[in-house]
Length: 169
Image 1 (cartoon, one colour):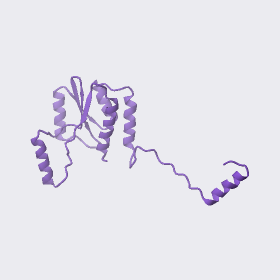
Image 2: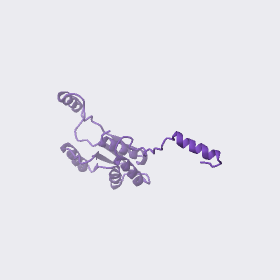
Image 3: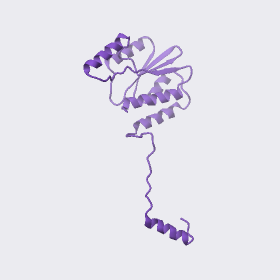
Image 4: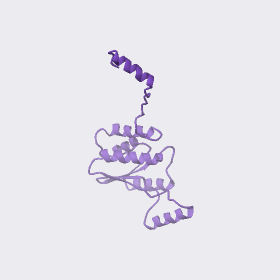
């Protein structure tokens, strides 16, 4: 899974568990990585645009009573596109919120800064999610596996002899 996809998944888990009612959120996916040739991808994007899909819409939309916050999730050194900067300006002109977040903790801070209610303990949960993001490799959420040596015939014989002599091992 790509770093930005992992961040999106962790943000979803965080919002599901810590965003308080009546607030609501959704992730927005425009299928920006269409399959096919360059020509096929261009046709797919034209089709989406004909349905009203616009470039620059942020990854997550959070709705609260009387207020909306859009969060653009960025991993690593990725920067906002021109369309995303334009979307940020629109949201600010409408007196709504916009935040570029590179971690779950930054998303929580943006929510708090804009007065969107979160459940108690959100900071600890955000740090937990960010720690899981910072581990590398497959099974990044699993603890390291401890390996024990397989018993040898000689070792088993020693144990049997000790037990026979009344020593419990």
